[in-house]
Length: 257
Image 1 (cartoon, helix red, strand yellow):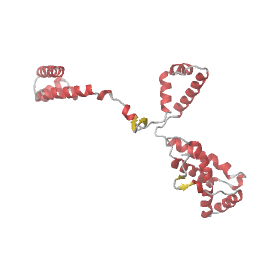
Image 2 (spheres, helix red, strand yellow; image 1 turned 90 degrees about the vertical axis):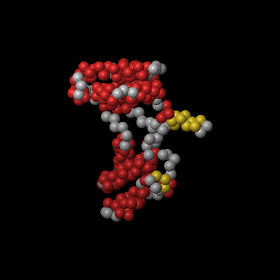
Image 3 (tube, one colour; image 1 turned 60 degrees about the vertical axis):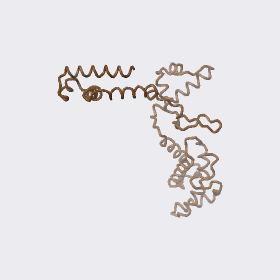
Image 4 (cartoon, one colour; image 1 turned 120 degrees about the horizontal axis):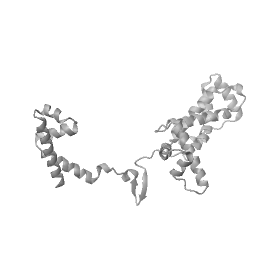
């Protein structure tokens, strides 16, 4: 963002500079309803917005969006400025521009974190800094003990204020081969071993009779009792029990082969 020259289609290198006299004259004119003076005043103060935007360099912040938020703050400052304040416009405008930028960065966060959790996280950071100043390792256990809170609370609060990371974030690059975070994820429920077991189970069930398949489906997928199944299938509960046991035995035998 700092190196960006054109922001929101505005060439920041060509922004005009207004003298104090010009600022005063334009303010009087725009307050009188002169739209041309208003536009000239806004453009003439975009350098002020740009200087404040540079404070908020962050990899996850879009330069155009932050600049736009700053311009919104500038316009609000213009609309609310009173000539009777007897202060420089920039003195009045800076807090409003900063407030608008901070509001955008806060509200634009993809993950909303409650104030209480943020406060806890900031206290954790202070305690961690204090521990490290004593040349000690600031472990989760030490931080939790010093704050007299659970270790899980410390972990949760720190995770809450961490910036989200894209799954496509490059974590290694050599000879043009990029390794992304996504490549390092592993789902234990989808391992080759689990997949093989699922295939074996499916094949074993396919070898059962239609009645045995239906009983297992009703029993283990729909959660019905043997009595309910007997009424639906039209056989006795004892027959349902026998067929269920035989089907399970056949499946176990097929999988173990």
